[in-house]
Amino acid sequence: MNNGLFFVLIAYTIWGFFPAFFKLLEDVPALEIITHRIIWSFVFLALLLWLKSGLLKLKQSITRKTFGIYALAGVILTINWLTYVWGVNTDQIVQTSLGYFINPLISVLIGVLILKEKLRPLQWLPILLATIGVVYLTITMGSLPWIALVLALTFGFYSFLKKIAPLKSVHGLTIETGVVVIPALVYMFFLYRNEAAQFAAGNHWTTIFLILAGPITALPLIFFAAGTPRVSLVTIGILQYIAPTIQFLIGIFLFHEPFVQAQMIGYGFVWAAVLIFTTEGLMENKHAGRTTR
Picture 1 (spheres, one colour):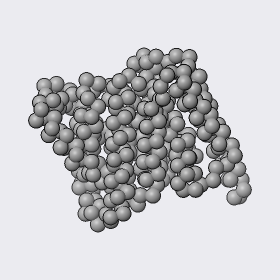
Picture 2: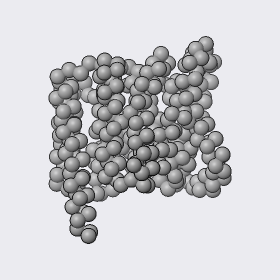
Picture 3: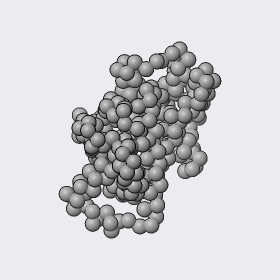
């Protein structure tokens, strides 16, 4: 196994076990968790850049356009984090996993609608199947699976912004968290002023886990950035389903979330879409490899 593949596997595996970590903080309001996730991610990343003498280079590389891209990315990422943690800590891990199963298809649609990319005929089928699955879940379960859709849409647009962003992952994430760290600190001040903060309020483990939320957030992104240049996009396309699969299994078997027949049918449409989407990509890549020989 080459180092790139190993790094990407670590990243997706850590993302997969995120629900188990954030469940340790289920007694803490989601907004306070995200506040600490932002603050300690920023501290961790800034310290990492400082140790690597990268802060000056980061300052020199920031332009108005670059800052705008990463500021928007930071806001979108914060919405994604808040939705995810709220979903996990309200016992909806299975639905959060659905969001990341759908995400690659959302990314394809963004490519079509914004970047004017062309879809191959067979690529429309998984998008149709995923749409049927979401509509079916909405009708049978009585509500739109909004957590899954918000996660898929925010991460899809975040991925689009990262596609056009010029900086490396660590530099970019430092700006993204830096943009939202000030409102996060203001909110922390508000919590302390009203004696509502859980941080350093008596439970030492809660305080430790809130601090660890920063490095645990940043580390898989660093591993992912280190591994992706050495791994083919086809391989990444397959490996990206590791995280939601682990999350789904954790929700069902570790936290015993309900999974009724209606969910099984709706998720079945989405899983069929994922299977077709991945298989089509592998076949197209194999065909392209033959034609270039």
